[in-house]
Structures are given as structure tokens and as C-alpha cells.
Length: 335
Image (tube, rainbow, N blue to C red):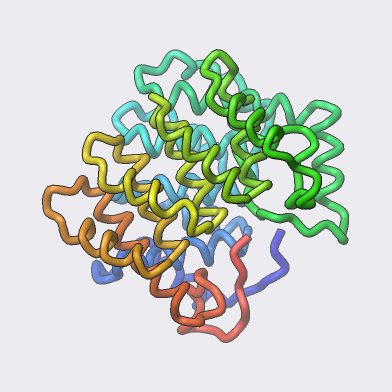
């Protein structure tokens, strides 16, 4: 639980921004308010974030579900379960609700997740499969030891996110020393990543292991995953590139963004990754797709958010989650 306390007026300001009560708040500012609320990790932030599922933007609702999972509080489960059950909701939002349930990781969620293993939407089915495996892994000896290690006051994570799957054993935390990883190791992880006969959970473990390695060779291995036929799998690779922030991934991400035949959920994640990497060659592509009237809504909106991220990365601002900037001077860091 975050130790940060804020006034009721500040909380109301964040709520008004996230929910766009004035009708005049740009989407990217709503995202900043959302990530500020996420960093608070309070019951109030969960309550406010949960109200946002009435919005029309699938992109925003997808991000709401993600943040509820990252807060990792079981009190968010009822709203996430409701989203997963709503067959009229965008599959991208339902998938993220299931993934968030996996991140919160209570065994009570397993029966509902199992119900949707036969959902008509492939991304929902696959996410439920991975979420169940994540919850079960968390209860294993390796999972328990890993959880205990993260609670050590000296533990400094390489990435603060709760991932849908832990990295392959031996690469669970931190960047390995240069001499510890050979090209043969990367090739083996690449083979695991691309092996469609393996359970998705195992393939995801290889994916996050390659992320933790983070070298150009690891980036190339991850990029090979864009040839997969699963939109969920490809969207997770794009998300990982957004965490890595490696300029080496920019060409393949631009290719994904430009590919009109690619799934919207993959292209949206590629756009946001490009905004985070924020190199000069990225900017024209984001500007192009935010303005294109033939672009899917979620792609246009993602490019709008990505442009704000690009500007933030090139501005010298200390942090992105600055939703309290106008109401307080206290630092709020994104978890």
C-alpha cells in the first residue's frame, strides 16, 4: 500500500480528470490521471478507476483494467469479473480484465477464468489460459520464493510491472551479466518463444526472459514473434518493447503500426511502445496515424497518447504520472 496521502480535493481533481466530467479533458491527460491514481494504490483509487468502465473508449478501459491488476488488490476483482463476463465489451478490454485477475492472483479467480477458456474471442481464451497458469505458478515453491525475495527491502526490480508470466527460471529478476548469456542461450529462448506446441505460459516466460536480457540479439529474437498468428502474443511482444525502450526495436514496431492488416490491439501496443522509446524517427509516424481518418479508433487514440509520451520523454520532465501537478507539489511515482 502506498504511504502517500492526498487531500479529498486532490482526489476529486484526479477523478474529474480521469472521468472527463467537464467533457474537455484530452485523452492523454486522462491517462496521466489514471497512472497517478495507480501509483496511490488505495481503495479510493480503485473506486475511481472502476467508474471509468462506463466510458466509450476501449483504449482507456483496457488501460483501466491493466492498472487495477497492477495495484494487486483483491477489492478490484468484482469489477474485473464483471468486465470479463460482459460479452458486449470490446475483447481488448475483456482480455485485459482477465490478465488483471491473473496479476492479482487469488485462487478464487480460477473457476471464473476456466469458464472463459472456451470464449468465442481468441484473445480472451488465451488470456484466461495464461492467467490461470500464472496464479498456479505463484503458489509453487519457485513462485513463493520469488514473492518472498521481492519483499526484501534491498530488492530493486529491473521492471516494476506484474507480468502475465514470470521470466524463465534463472532469469526471473535483473539483467544478467554480459558473460552469463551466450548467443546459444538466446537462440534457445527464441526457440521456446516461437514453439507453438508449447503452452502460451511457457512461451511468455521465454518472452520475459529475453526482455530481461535486453540485448540487441534478444530484441531480434523477440521481434521474430511478430510472425505468430496470435494477436495476443504479438501485442505482448510490443508491450515488452515498450518496457525495454530499445531503439533497436523501432523498425519492427513502425512496421507493425503501419500494417493495416494487423490486429488493432497489436498496432495500438506498437504505437505506445514507439512513444516511450521516443527517438526522432518515431515522431512522423505517430503524427501520421493520429491524423489518418481511415485509422481504427484505438490506433488513433494510442498515437495521441504516444505523442504525449514522446513529448514527455523529450521534455526533461521527471515523471509521466503527474496528475497532481496542478494540485500539489508532492512526488508521485508510477509503480
